[in-house]
Image (cartoon, rainbow, N blue to C red; front, side, top):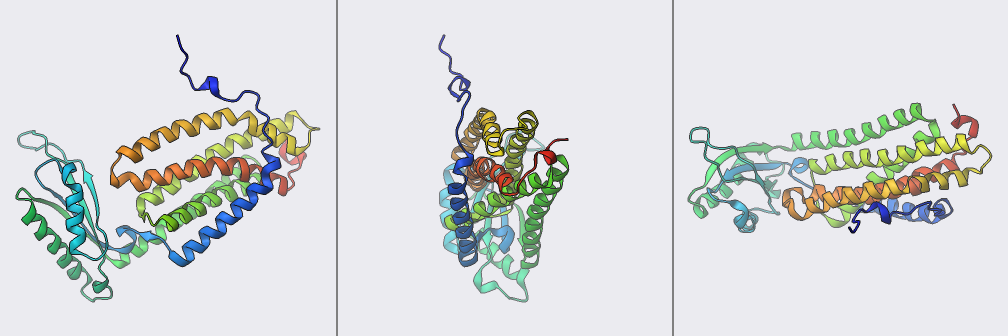
Length: 325
């Protein structure tokens, strides 16, 4: 019987000189970081309603909404400044009859420029919401209101601060963990690799102008966890091989360690990407941004574990006595 397993195609006893390519990788990473900072400084991010404020309307049109998604998006966008966000939400069965209900919809109305700075901010947002709701009622006779939520400027500003704080605290905790788990050089290398991943992810969202909302913050934190996991695996093998090959040059030990974990890295990345690509294609517009961020994060996280985290140990001058316990 034919063997379909992916393992048989993975490299065995690989001897790829990753560390000798560190200078090329360093130049590429520096260019990417500078470009990302430039894009963020000049274009900023396309913040979603979570960070800009606005109105979220949840409703049902009485039928399966999938066929009407594009029509509803076009209708909503024609009534307000900017593009509305739209995604389906699952609904529970009817409590009285037990019959299944069609999925509901969540429509996000961005904060309108004409309303910015108004004293009666909530009232102005409510007026915008009612304008859109009236159009939905006219277009869909079985329209059913579910809920409404107004996000003001103050709330969205707090969400920005908390999102940034969550990422910074994650990097700080990683530094502390790796410092105690290995040595300070390893901690510095891991944080540099994670900061590299976060900056490049923000740069990609500045370039593509994809909506940046709380789900993307969650994706960035997940990227941090994924990249850290890969980095710790490589670091653990580096420490093991440093103890084992005490007389080998550090560059050879690093190369050996990366190649030892290469099959595991490829398997993890490929299987993760399969799930993420499926999520991106069939997950709907509400999950596209999250899935895209995660797909990018898998690539950049794998790259940084090999070409950023490990080579930094060469630059910091890790001593054999400091690695051995």
